[in-house]
Image (tube, rainbow, N blue to C red; front, side, top):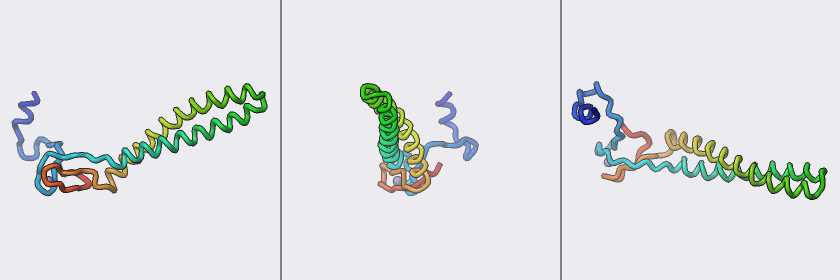
Length: 122
Ligand SMILES: [Zn+2]
């Protein structure tokens, strides 16, 4: 099936989805994903930080229930809120970063001629 589809290109009838370099038309394109990686890392840090901050608030409330409750509450809260916050932040940051990659950064790099460009021509 695939061989048949790839073997016939009726000028425009079949959409070639392979990204190509706008300069040399090479299909050897690298996606750099700078924004996505950066956004994911920043999001994870921000999410973990806010998660830990919420856990500390939880510990302060736990103080009212006694020192043991505060320690247990803080330990559980930091771990759980930190993980949840980090994962949420990372996902949100990755999404934001991917949007930046698409719209702002020159996200693609041609391996043949080294040309960098924002959107690959199809
Ligand atoms: Zn090129």
